Length: 116
Length: 111
Image (cartoon, rainbow over all chains, first blue to last red; front, side, top):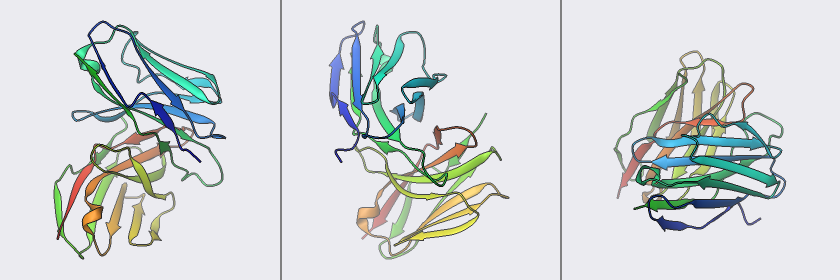
């Protein structure tokens, strides 16, 4: 299994530009999560989907952020317009709820976003 | 506010000794608990999970859960330099898919 695949690995963009991060979850997983990690705030959940449906987007900072999951194998996180404070590592993770409640997530390699 | 708290460290442990990492959580509705290891510049990697009170062992790792006291710990026996990383504690609440993470404890194993 190729694991959770994220692209790009690194993104440097100018303030005000649109940024799109992409994620392909593990095949067969039915939940997908977008997290943001910074030194100050650690890992924060932005949004998660179950069976392609957004379930909880309470962590999305503001209207500049949007996420979609058009099918079971692809999701995007878009920031428009981007700001320097959006600089962080963005992780995508996926999971499949089976059996006992201690099933965990598998994380992708992350996208390091720098907004200048 | 549902919180997961960890000592940020750094925690330094001599090679071959036992490293003990602790995590407390505020919500008694917490169902299952996770320890992730994150090397610098890498993504978090699941190393242990537990949902029943008591101990759960996997190789050199032991997770301990005490729901009455609302803490979960991770013991690493025979610590190796390759264990040097940040360890993240995470909690899943009943009826919810998402994990809430602590800010992590940085562990350094001294050769």
